[in-house]
Length: 193
Image (tube, rainbow, N blue to C red; front, side):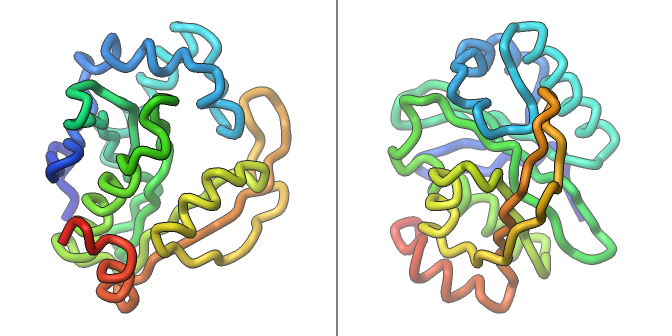
């Protein structure tokens, strides 16, 4: 069902399967410390990013996730990463996450363009029942972004994860389901239709 080499593209963004060539292209973005404030991964050096990148590539090879490099067509530059993860073919669901954008690409509409590509693929191409998103309870900016694209707030998983720095994290879960997708698409993504 899942094609780990799929390229998703619209007028604003191109999501390319993550490859080794992307490491050097994404490294300067990954060194923006603010990107990792609320994530479980803590990237403070090129070596930290190498570890993070290699895990994504290993998961891609195993088929447990499908990581993408995000190319912003409006600036003609790479702007970050996102991923299909926690894939369950049996239950026809996955999570969109591990998403980070260069500071200058945030609040520009790029995230909405990328989420439209990802959600359309999930619901209209491969026929999933559910797509999940989660973030740190402390990450209010991310929660607001999820609500702005029609994601349904489901609740808080207390003490859900341990960050690489040892801090306990409460996670806020959001979702989309296939029955709601046509209305969400019309209400929140009409600009792309």
